[in-house]
Amino acid sequence: LNMPLVAHSPLPTFARLREEGSEVLELDRALKQGIRELHIGLLNMMPDAALQATERQFIRLVGSCNRIAQLFVHPFAVDSNARGAEAKSYIESYYEDFDALAAAGLDALIITGANPVQEDLTTEVFWEPLLEVLDWARESVCSVVCSCLATHADLKVTYGVERTRLPEKRWGVYSHRVLDRTHPLVSEINTRFDAPHSHVYDLSPEQFREAGVVVLAESDEAGVHLATSSDGLRFVYFQGHPEYDANSLLKEYKREVGRAAAGTRDHPVFPAHYFDEPTRALLDGHRAEIMAAVNAGTAVPEFPEAELELYVDNTWADTGKAMFNNWLGLIYQLTHADRAKLFMSGVDPDDPLGLRASADRVRA
Image (cartoon, rainbow, N blue to C red):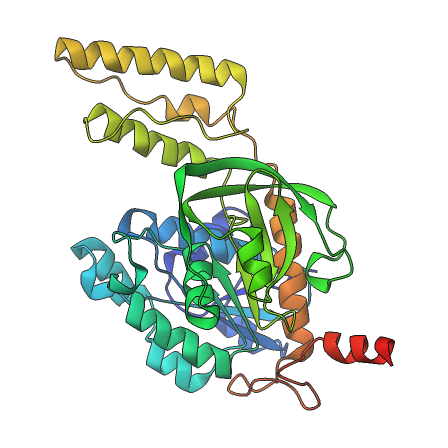
């Protein structure tokens, strides 16, 4: 049985996921079932163009989990005043207020990545509001998933770890290995799996470990994908993107090609391990057509997105779903039935999984 998502607001994502075949309950039906609820916040910091797609990706991941509970997902934003008119209107229409959510309480929280404009994260418009959310969550939420930039932000403020700029953008689909097969977050996951990455800044495996953060999955090429705070659960860090759709990197490549055609950047390199050789050949041909059009001053040919979508594969979705399933399963076991309270009775907030207590018993 799946944990059904509950359409507790008019958020368009609920209708779209229902059309895709996801189980989404109407609120009146959900209230009659008497099934335990989990309330999950989604702080969406992605730029306007990716706001709704990122929202759908994470809510789809949450809805794919297979334990019996009703899942109420509460999207919110902290930088809506800095957004364009369309995105600001969408947020005002469908997103919730952080202060109201903080007062009501959350069982779990997901914080998306963001596309930083400044080299220094502390000068970003979202920085101070993000710190407010992180500080509240540290004291009030059972477990927080940080994605990409949110991971870099929390390691900076919590451990004083500074990210570094890579020589070139790291993007593509990379092979990873599970390092600690006993950890419940990676229970029954393939010991080697694929996951996408897309980032210009990076935290190395050594930086994670020196901070006392536990690395659970790592790639020889791409570095850390999954890690947790030393207690094993309170903060879960992704540097990769388990939420990505099959075509997410394709759309990103399309945007970069558009910028190259407009003369604002060089033509992008291919995402690693993503396009097969026939697809690369097609894209090389498209690049030649763009260059010819630019030199001739004629219209740039349309990017063959629809054709290419048939040839890109998703080799990471099942692993991402399994990780989120494990995460929400642990929260279901540990969080208090009252969403305003952190843990059920008897759970140590500093050792919710009992990992330290178990290690102490072994040493004794």
